[in-house]
Image (cartoon, rainbow, N blue to C red):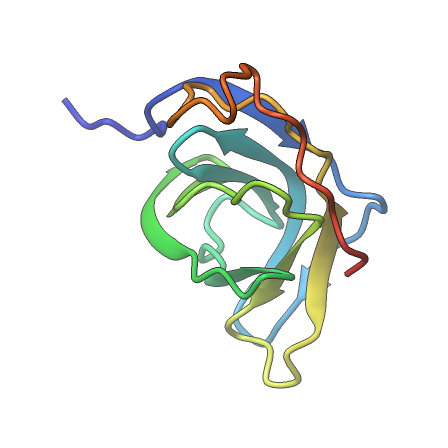
Length: 139
């Protein structure tokens, strides 16, 4: 059986600050949400039509994390794409771009809320659990 959803718990969901379609020479689509799982991300996409090609996405955060495309599933005009890794602690923003856009314009940028409690502690910090939240610098 195919394991599409990342393992671990769902840590949060990002909703776009604005609604709008992104149009490239190859496809039209709208990003509906991004699910943050403990081990990866799931991007929920609405395609302009059921027979339209799925978009090729590039994900980036302000740290410069490299997100790798893992899998995709399409039912009618809905497309889900999974990426790894999950957002690192302290991530403030996540930007999605279309690989088909020659100008490299962002499709959407999400503000990522602080997720102070990890799913499982790596190691206690000074005997504290949960560890003290990280201080975040402006992006």
